[in-house]
Image (tube, rainbow, N blue to C red; front, side, top):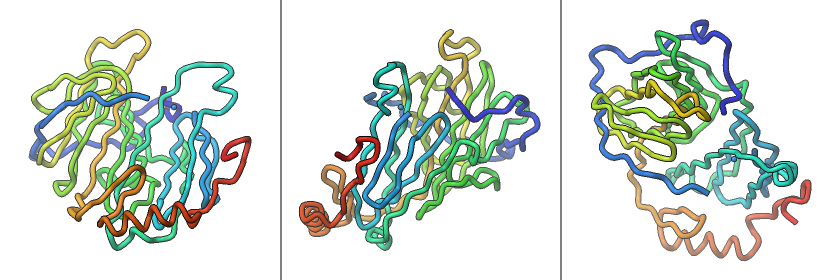
Length: 262
């Protein structure tokens, strides 16, 4: 699954939480709904093909139209792909900022490992133990794609003012110091503390040899929120304005590229 990898992880910087860092308990484990290489286009001019290990980071701001779809070649040939779309709310002060698009190729992410080299950590956005990822955000967040070999365990430092989530993309393992079981398609919600623990089971399925997990966290905004469909604002009045902007065509149009947006 992961395209971004190294032959010997022990050549990478190693990360581990301090021994006295309070471990975060697991509050809940839930199973996520499931619908991916994608083609992306938007009305702000951003776009391209998202392939193995890539990230495309879009800030909607004052509003734009966008479309993601599997490329025609994949539709014709068939096959399995796995994609994640993460929505991060903007604070009220930034809601109407100009839209922005970041194209983060797999080779740009910050690569780290655990002390024994049993895990590969890809910092996509935010920072981990002083190591910065390429994704630019408007409120502090951290997003990491971690691959753990069978039996490997990571205990990572985690900002105490952040919340914490772990989503399993493949394989099976446990989360938290209490070793709560998790598997493909499940999300673990962590409580308060200064470190996150994830462990891969000794035995994995033959088609998914490693545990693949996305670790997410951010500083809560704690502002009023009004949302409907794809629009997320702070008040009902702002929500009505967003619909009016959309219906009046003020969000622009998606350019027709390779048949998309037509």
